[in-house]
Image (cartoon, rainbow, N blue to C red; front, top):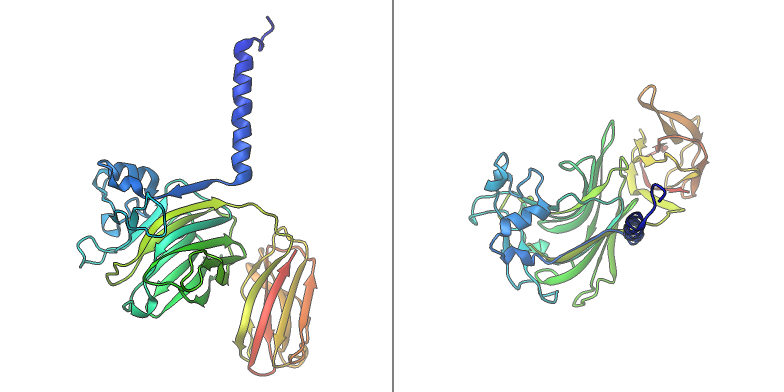
Length: 365
């Protein structure tokens, strides 16, 4: 019998073919996690929980930094609590204290799980921001691997407001952006969808009194500073004890789609002084066509002092931004710069003739 033939080899080939087919089917559909926290009621809950979840420091509790895994303890939880889910419906109670008095930050993310683009569907009991004490910081979102990594995008609930927020580091600066939103059904169980799909993070939730997350409640422009994978996470990083923050059934999966055109809002009614301001950075590596659109209530004339709308690209040799194109701007008329120039990242520097209210956005294809 020739080498590599025979019934045993054929069976191995068939098994391998099935495994490859399953692998590519999983890649096509996207990897999904579904969790109900039901195993928290088991006698070996610590072992089962930490086989699936971690905190930033290993343990989910900040106070357990440096302890061995055998000394880690569970976060708080409640049985039959998630009223937005059919059984099993245990809930993770993210109170940031073990004894109810001493503040102890708590952070949970799925172990060895990450995505490029992700959509999280979760049930939660979110407190009313209006009744939260100063210092509250309740978080659901995504961050690059490694203690916040280079960027994080999340829903942040604080005293007096809820926001979609993004923060990301580049070689030279920390970028921040946020959008204030309204929690439609606070102090009650409700279902939410958090969509991490650069260049935006979006939150969907039910309308007031509703049950289906069919209302787009807000979006924030996000600027990932690398192609790193992100991991979903839940955290209570309040500086005071907050107990009424609970996560019920949740799932997360990666979705794959080709973005032929991406629009990124850089300024919205931004106040720009007559000395000028740099916009946020637009990552343009591998992108062919870049268009920047600007609308200002003040003009800017190239050649009149330092005025103008300037397209700047990153110069990796000198580690600085260099101006490659400049145009004049007429008040209350749309100005634009289009370029096919290859560059890793770009930004706009705008100098109006007087303090101006400015909208600026980029479209890349």
